[in-house]
Length: 224
Image (cartoon, rainbow, N blue to C red; front, side):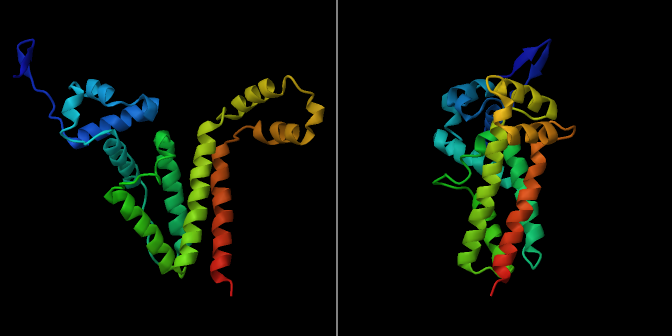
């Protein structure tokens, strides 16, 4: 039955799978996956938790679907000879998606029941590498190296205790206060002459490292 506010009927927004998943992702983005439960999700949607089971089998099903949505946000690499550009665009897109959904970093490759977006993503990456001339074994090596770098960087970035050069100075002061700086001259030089300089952003390291990885894969592809 529609309720009335100030004489006007207020219609409840229909509950569907898409709305459930988007709300679950918003909750996880805000508080992490550990803060997400079927009960809390139901409260956010204004329904009893049992109502969610008309759209999802259980929490594992929910997480599977959430991960698949994240995969759907990642740019698929194209096929053709310019595989390095395709892999670069895909890597940057995946890094950005993981930055938006930090809870997903450890889940992207762990699902026993992947969704269509995840399967499409993996198929496209393998297809792009194969079209560039990588045989199956080399495509597997390249895929593993790229993802190890992307996920590893995203995890490191997520756990850093600073973001700006100003925050670097604060963290460094707290971290090194109990010690004699003269015992760690190289670290002190790195902090003061590099990390504390205006405009420093650890995020900039990503594309440098990505170029190193891609150049190494290119040399392996072209080796006799």
